[in-house]
Each structure stands twice: as structure tokens, then as C-alpha cells.
Amino acid sequence: MPKGATAFSLWLRLGAPDFQVVPRDPKDIGAICYTSGTTGHPKGAVQSHRSIIAAAKGIALMGTRTSADTIVSPLPCPHVYGSIVFNAAVMYGSTLVLIPRFSEETVLEAIQTHRATMLDGVPTAYYYMLAHPKFSTYDLSSLTRCTVGGQVLPAAKSLEWTERTGAPVLELWGMTELAGAATLNPYCGDNKPGTIGLPMPGMFCKIVDSADASKTLAPGERGELMVKGPLVMAGYFGNEQGTKETIRADGWMHTGDIATVDEDGYYTIVDRKKDMILTAGYNVYPAELERVLCMHPAVALAAVCGVADEAKGELAKAYVMLKPGAAASGKELVEHCRQHLAAYKVPRAVQFVANVPITSSGKIMRRLLRQVDDGTRIVGDQRETRGAASA
Image (cartoon, rainbow, N blue to C red):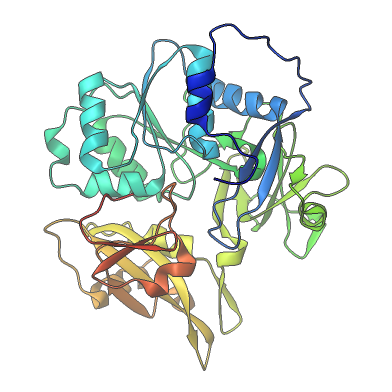
């Protein structure tokens, strides 16, 4: 345990039912949340009490969470996504069923047993559940809507989930630097699978030129997503330079995500700027390839990263998990991609895998994909033997 820290178990033993509430200003520090480190070393985002409460209120409002809901969540509570789900349930009186560690059958069983009306999860949770051979044996008819965030869920998988359960998947987007979600497809409104929806109340978004943040782009143009509003962190703990590079003097924050916005104001994430693959001078975004690969009926999950190439600098390589009992060759998947992508975007290699590297919150770690083999699964920087829990 770090020096100066107090174990939560000690608080439980020494705590008393009566206590004096300490007055707090909304701008006071409420938490320091660390980024997941999918593209680099984790950084501590300083969040105010106001931003933490506003994030929970926003997801409850956009998702219409009420005391009538029973919510199943396999999300870790220390993660901002899990945190806002937890806080919103407490604030609005929902029944919350927490899953200590994700496994397909545990989550599906919880939905069936508790007659859950909502499910919150990251894309890998939906990938694994849809691919589970016993999926169709569970009664999931109580679900009225589900949410997904953390990374992009291909529209094909969102639609497959809805077709098989009857429940729409409301995709959201957020960051640790934003105390959770900042955009969401509304439950009472148009849900556009493949998009991250509309800004939360009080939040503002815009798409700017990646090389010149002062230039706002028109609908349909690709650029960096920038955000402004009460959810923006106060800064990175002990990292003044990192704070200055991320938050402009006018309050707008760089997200590092490449995105577009349509005429209705719905935003779509193209990919993380740092995950971009540069192939012979062309920009290739892994998430775009993953969306196309997931359209193939045999594919359960696809993850793409760049591999070095002497002639073109980098080439795209796909790591693919097939659905149980399904068959497809690498050549077949490449031909499938050719039908939907420009020639320079088509993956040049396909490796079939049993699992992909994920963080403790379930995000795919593209920077560790090159370490994947058929015998182990990588979680963070730790190797686990095949047969361990899926997330």
C-alpha cells in the first residue's frame, strides 16, 4: 500500500453510522482518476465534485435511468465509466447489480435472474457475449436498452445485439479527463448505431483541423474532436506541461480523437489520433478496418494495428477472433475488406487468435497486439493462460 494511504477495509472497521458532513465547494477536488494507458503511461486527471455529479446526471438524463430500472454492470467502479453508472444508480434509486469480474455467462445469468432492464459494458463484453455458444439459451427479454463505451463498437455488432435481444445499444463517448461520458445517443430520441450521439447537457463539441485547432471543420470533415464544459478536468495531477498541452486557455480541451459530425449534430469517432497507421503517406485508422471486419458473419471480434514495412513505412495487420463453429480464411476476410475499403486501407495480414490484449476495464490495447499468440491472453502487461476469465 502506498505510504500515507488508508485501506478501505480499515475505514469500514472504524467507521460509525453518525458523521459530520464536511461542506465542499463544487470546484473542490473530488477525485483523481488515472487514464487507462492504452496509448501511453497513465496520467492523473483531477476531477471536481461538480464534474463527477454532472457526469452521473448526464448519463441518467440521456439514458432515462430511473428507480424502475435494474442495471447490470460488469464495469470496474474505479474506472470513470463504472463510476458514473454507480453514481447515477445511487442518485436516481436504480437497482444496481455489480459483476466483480466479467465473464459471458455471469453477465447473461445476471440479466436473466434479476430481470435487468439495462446493461452497461465495453465493446469487448458485447463481442464475447454475442460469440458465446449458449447466448440464445438465456432470456434477455427484460432488457429495454443497453449502453456501450470505452472504445468504438462497430455498428454491425450493435445491430446484431439489438436483433438478438430486442434492446437498442446506446453508444456513448467519454474520457477519464471528462469524469466519464460527455456524449450519448439518447434513449428518448434518435439512436444512430456507429455514432457516439449528442453532447451531454452543458457540454460543447467541435471538430477542428488536426494541424490547426483554430480552424473549425464543416459537417462530414474529419478532424480532432474538442470539448468544452463542466465535465472538463481541472488538469493532470503534478503535470503542468501536460495540462497546458491538453486544455487551451479558452477552456477547449484536446481529446486526441479523430471524429466527424453530421448535419443533425451526432458525432462519430473515426479513431484515436495516436493509433493512426501511416501507409505510404496515407492515413489508415484501425477502427475503420475493425468496423468492416466485424460486418463479416464469421467474425466475433477484430483488432487492427500497424506493423513495420520497409517500402511503405507501416501496414495494417488484423487480429481476428471467429465465432464458435464459424470458419473463414485470411484471404476471404481480405477480399471482404476490398469490397468496402480503398485499396490502401485493406489489411495486408490476418492472424486468427483466441483472445486479444485488454485493460482491466476491457479496452483493447492495440500497442500490445504484436505480442498476441494463440496460447496466451494479455491483460495489461500481465500474461494469463488460456481459459481464464474473458475480461
